[in-house]
Image 1 (cartoon, rainbow, N blue to C red):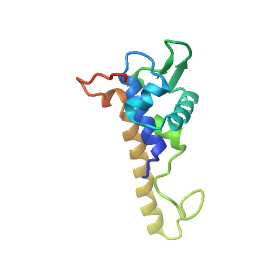
Image 2 (spheres, rainbow, N blue to C red):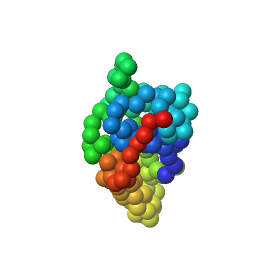
Image 3 (cartoon, rainbow, N blue to C red):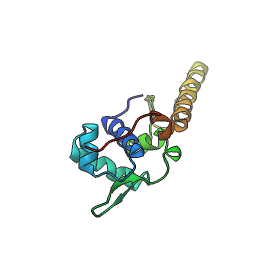
Image 4 (cartoon, one colour):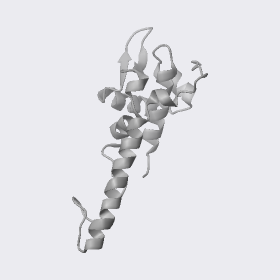
Length: 139
């Protein structure tokens, strides 16, 4: 399974927002996470459309989580940024072909693994990634 740079940056950004006590500007978030500001802005817009983050305008505005950090999981972020993920490429579109019984049996392995990946990532909340004694500081 390959995770895109966009998804990797997105998880980092959401984690930083979860650790902040106040909304963060794109500039502050990009600087704190050492991310390209223009790219981060595109990522945050996708996450906003997916209802994972929210944006507030004004002097005390910025980006923040749309829900509590316990209610946002890594699977949601990856799916929002990378779209429907199929970790294993199939030789043809649609269902995996079963030309022989062994094909059907081995295809079941990949289906189970895909399900387990989704289940595992769904169980990893952003809150669980926050170090117990860590405080996020804005630059």
